[in-house]
Amino acid sequence: MSNHTVTVAHISELPEGGQLKVDLEDRELLLCRFEEQVYAIDYYCSHDQLGLEGGELERGCIVCPYHGAEFCLKTGEAMASPAWEAIPVYPVTIENDLIKLSISASK
Image (cartoon, rainbow, N blue to C red):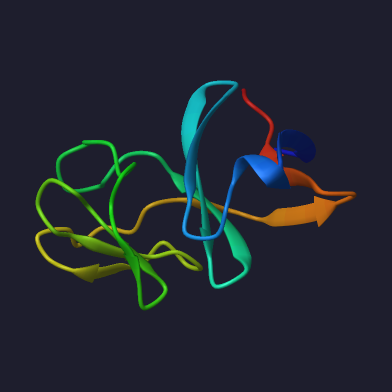
């Protein structure tokens, strides 16, 4: 599969500490801005497939607002139970204040 770059938002839509849900092709993603970095992660928790939006951002992680599972924003690694499976993360670039993601092409 090949990757392509998609513009998903303007940086002004994502204040420091903010989150923004993005519907993209066949997937739902969550943009998070933490300590001046922008991260793109899968929208859903791997534990119970509930949305991560609204979860606290702390120590470089997002905490699931439903059951407290934690995921590393950079790697997607599950850092605290009840989740044990990582979530997908997507490379982010910012060009001219536009947030762009590198996404693998759908089949």
